[in-house]
Image (cartoon, rainbow, N blue to C red; front, side, top):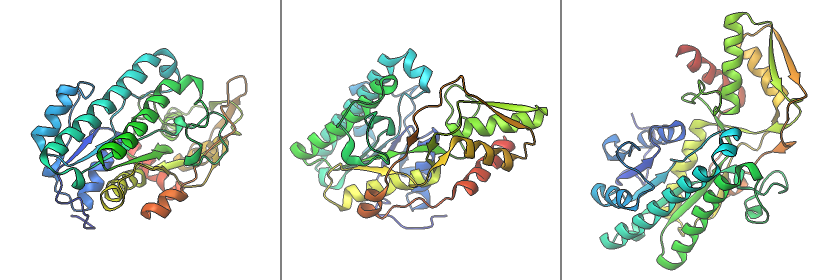
Length: 328
């Protein structure tokens, strides 16, 4: 049953990637906020190639949707970004180009541009490699993103610049949110190559406990700190961003979605081991890379502009994720 009414309840809403980790959480959040499930459209890549403008045009015009929450993307881990930089750039840039332009055209022709909004999900990897930590939105475009993920990161930045240009020229309403590392039930934990950090560690420690493995080997020193956001909190940020785009100026001011709290990778591994009941040793392979020393976001702008704050404490969120994974 819906828990809270929302100004989005009367809209038809497209959630791209709506069957994925973040997108499915956005769908659940929309329903909880009073949007009928029948008014939420989830395009599937098998029948709707969002990189194709014709497909995007047909989607926008046939559904009559006046909100787009764009969660879909070509994503992968560090090695996948190294192996397929062209695909990560083209697929993400092409989807944004097609959807934003076709949304603008459909809404303009229907005379509903002022009552419509486009939400783009960005990426923390778009921050410059040497930006001050915690990352603040003002640092975007002040330097180059990390080389290995730059094609993906720049494609996400290009989508933001397109939304800004369309707001200035066409008065398109939009929002641009940048979530930190996500975790929670529904993550693709089984895919070790592309799993998120928390999900990957949960799988490793649960599997080690089940097999009575004497130790779990983790890469690096464990000293670097990271920040983690529960999936439902991220989804709530996307929904609030849509409401903010409709109720405010509609300018796509970037907004970080994070907790503002860090934990070392070593501390995270020890916490997960305790929560899953793994009694063995944790061994740190210091011959492997540790990654950058700190990577965390400043979420104060999202709090100030749309009243959003992360609610789920890390330990409680990890317990929920572990319970979900063990039930699969």
